[in-house]
Image (cartoon, rainbow, N blue to C red; front, side, top):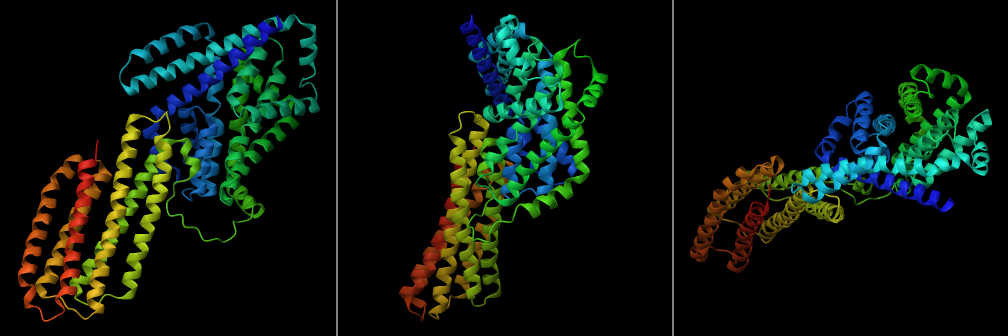
Length: 544
């Protein structure tokens, strides 16, 4: 008997957890494009941030994912603390959707849903169709797992020893409420899934092993326990990210404190939304939602004060030199679509830096003046920064590529991002070599002829135009624009050949050290040709 109970409960819990994970993974894949657009919306105001937090959490079916993602944005300095608090508020409301899914109470359909989802997953060909089947199968596992747990616990109602055990955890007094809430928080902190403990709570209540007040008290504690995930994620994060995680814990803990202080009145308030006797699952889901909605309503006007308080309590990080350039944070890796979207932003930032290098060279050619040490240092700083861009982007994106749950579209975007990133870094190397060659001629008092200056200026202009077109095509995913740029690339190659031949013919006309002139001038021409080649590599490697 005991073994049967243990097997059913353990098996049901495992299927339930796997179902939640499968559904969450499927929802994240389907919501990938929406998640990539979320950042721009988060930077408006606190109301929008709350709505976005709700929206994202409902999409991915995990407040932990959305909260950790948000803290990753804070750690990368993409969000302020106040903006992050709004998202966390919204995530607390969004996570209550799990309870309302369980209200459907279609446990008997769980097994056929799993079977249908598995069959569809096996035979469907399209990636999106397979993802939908996986999500549907995960939903079926949730209900199947709940039914197995519920059936497994049925015999417990007639066992006096278990009845006495559960009677020790009753929310019939103030301290009893606190004790039950603490147990809910502890279990949730251990399993790091409020959805799992909510499912267990509903199962125990449905079987009559705990009463409604005890179930509500457990739910209160679960809201505190779920904050442990975000807390653990900030162990190596910066001060602002830690503040966001602490705020998550403070908000939920203070919420539990004020609700437990008026617990009998809170239960009376909840009775206005439905009787537990009529539908215990709906009553528990209502309690979960009302707690979080009430908490958000109470705390929202005080977001600024809470942020200021945490700023005083949690000291700023010690001033230290950081060589990080990008805003890609390791906490974002839980949401690959966000990393891929941010990576593209960072690669486009690399493009802006390269355009600045082209403009510096353009100004030198047009003004026909000496190259200053500041210009060389500026170019070298950009080139060094792009080396760091490449390192940080490559490290994060190779982790993403090893994620088994990443979609084919995200893999393709990642491949394109890495390809362009590598080529941009190499382009910056050659632009740095160009200014070094020009500076070498200047330092040795070896002037170029007007024709040679015009030739280099034209090469710079044409190469910069080619780069600008390809950068725009990459930003807009315009394959046609890339293909149209092939003609421009071929023109640059032809101009290089003409300039090379002309220089070799006229080399003897110079009254300057021919070896250094020829070497430096030809090197500069060749560097522009190499820039053209690496831009052309982007055209050849880009896929849509």
